[in-house]
Image 1 (cartoon, one colour):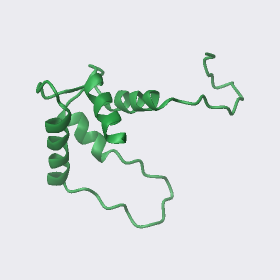
Image 2 (tube, rainbow, N blue to C red):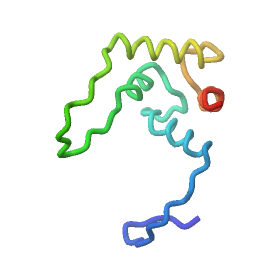
Image 3 (cartoon, rainbow, N blue to C red):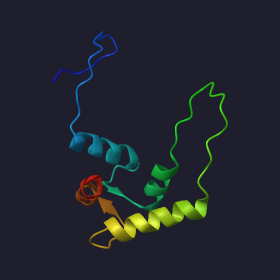
Image 4 (cartoon, rainbow, N blue to C red):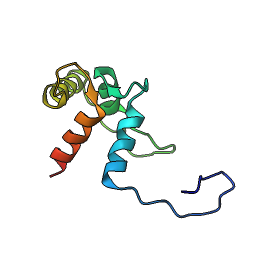
Amino acid sequence: MKAMTKDDKSTETPELSEKDMIYYLFVIHDINGDGYLDGHELRAAFTDFEHEEGHTEEKEELIPLDQVNEMVDHVLLEDDINGDGLISWSEYLESQLYHDD
């Protein structure tokens, strides 16, 4: 696999498998890099919306904090198989593949 540099003029993007895309989403939300998603990281994932510059349409409606907390609690209850309060990569992958069916 060739490393991409800023001088690379190639417009081809490597195709990512579904598992690679799931891993990418896990890693970008694992803010502290410990290999787990905790409640704070899950909350950030649920509220991390990128806003485009120059966006002229109405603001996207924000999710109320109590609803975000309910979502985090639900994910931990459903996907935290070993009950340690953290979502490991294997728990995350299993959950994503299960919900994708």
